[in-house]
Length: 228
Image (cartoon, rainbow, N blue to C red; front, side):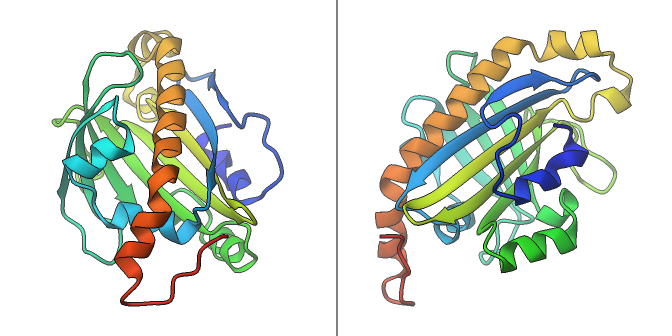
């Protein structure tokens, strides 16, 4: 799957690659991870990012790989527009400094298709963004990060929700003149395996405590709809 084919994530039908990684012809590393989040839903998932987890909660999220968490920009009512400044390991790889710049899903998906998918219940949450390796990662003149892309798409189910996470690592490198061989050297296949395992583990950890935390944070302000 290329980045321009991601509208397929808005439909529940199985994809050719639900969990695994592949090397695209231009050298970009595409990593896909399907995780079942029992007793969670899309509202909880989006709230977790809006809550801007600090270092303590970030370590709850992945007690082995996560190191530190800070946030820049944005507003409390949305994750869009904020940048997550983190240190973490990717399943045995050296510790990395990473920027995650959360963007509106319509930057990556057709706006009408997203609206229709939400209205029809085919998706219940979306967290999307640009990623940059290193806290000095390059940016476009308008401030957008250059590097990779991440797409988390949630669909509610009777038992909780299904999460599809797709990463396009090195997405901007071909346009910068890097050959497929050079990109593979920078982002070898072993990184695809490490990112896949890291992603599955962190969202499995999250699913264990997210429902209780969400209910505790919302019990005085709204009636919480829970999937059980």
